[in-house]
Image 1 (cartoon, helix red, strand yellow):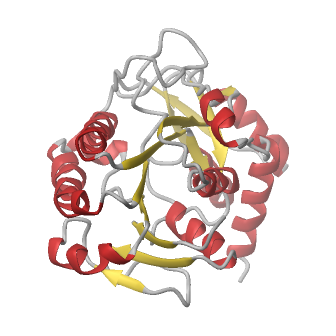
Image 2 (cartoon, one colour):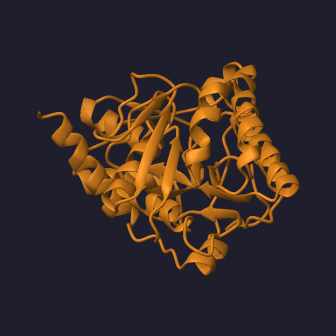
Length: 308
């Protein structure tokens, strides 16, 4: 890949920091835009502090970049379920202000990280392709659909080079623990704490999980020449029920995970497995880390972090 000037908006987040490390290690010119200074960012990289909607800052820095990753998200499904206006306040409005500036730099490549796990709702068939209807069950998923729609309109009207990646459920070493977000990370935290985990529903909900290194690789390959322009699912392609996931965690970590099953929630998708054929054909990308290996690596990382 040719040397590029790359801006990671939301570069202080989990995916952003991992992607920044990878790109910097390959000699790319990487800079980060983070919402506040408290974000943990990779050392040695230039950091711009300001929100996605900071028009003055964007006008100053955007002209120097040929590739921009939009990785920022101010919500989780649980957070905006309680206050749907947060999707507009923290995600949609800031992105529209970003587009106000970015549309004047349509020569730059834009990669937006969406959510393959939430925007399809309960699809009719599985694995689900990019052509399936979008029917989100949560405000978070609806927000992602709205963002995709505005960004696609920008690309259509301005001729911009836009790539939208729809990843499945992300996990791996380094992932922070947030309440109600990231089921594998949450399971491993309960395992570490010897506490009982509440599971919404009967445990038969099915998810597709992607390891952090595989998603970082997909992000890197989205910058290939010629660029894969369009919308792409990025998932492992295999579904596991939550009950199966519990059994795998117990077996891999050699420790009993205590679980309590609670009444299901209407915002939770019953089953979602992504068909990534389109992205594989466009880039040659393949997921390489199995769920068992990924959980083992994540558990080892979590243990090491708690023995320091």
